[in-house]
Length: 83
Image 1 (cartoon, rainbow, N blue to C red):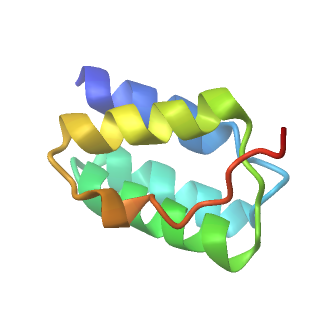
Image 2 (spheres, helix red, strand yellow):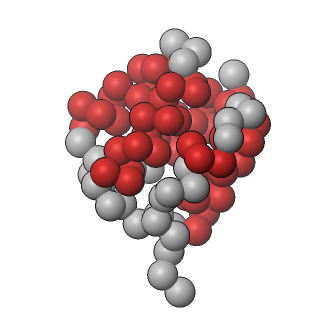
């Protein structure tokens, strides 16, 4: 349950940067115990729309992916913040 809540909070942070229907779909997936699919879809859309992540957003994605035992290729293609 903790992962689901953290994932929903993370997905919600992208409201306004991704389409609202996508955000609602990913939240619904997470609420229905499809967290892996929700995170994979979120990462794919973040890449497709060239969303630049804040350092804490990328860290949260990495942490959730690790807790779900996902490979780095789930998120490694995401844009790192410019320093």
